[in-house]
Length: 232
Image: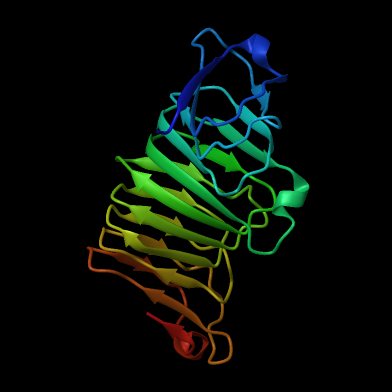
């Protein structure tokens, strides 16, 4: 059977570390009395298959992570401008196709979205549950592609040219930033894609937008010959 552990952090835990093995699920909470950012060193924690940051309002860093096969989940977060940093050992994200497994459930914001930072990650597999999720991945500078699945809806900020929401039924809102080479695929939900960043889509420099079965909205600024390589 899978074992689980809940860790509740306080301000005094900033910079703390602990050792653990053979526990598959770790849930991290922060005490309501905490006021500052907290970094937790998990270099000596092994065998975790899922990390969950639950109802957290402070900035949290998980430092010295090493296992990309684990999932990282955010649940019931409604604090504006929270930053979650997942700091992997450089050797573990030194490749060109490192993928991060993310999950969000009821991650909302009235202002600035939850910001997830993870250096060296080229792809994100994002599972969405719940309503009104808002997530910002734009600080992940190596990121090139995001796959979105699940039944929840999300407003996603990600500076990628490739987004695939074909496995999502809740609806995805996303604005492209690339000037060319965009590939955007919608799902069964009501998707809203803004690809007005595309300044040229010729037959030799193509972009494509393929929406799903929902009530979708696509914003395009190209016309005429400049749009000859854009498939919608």
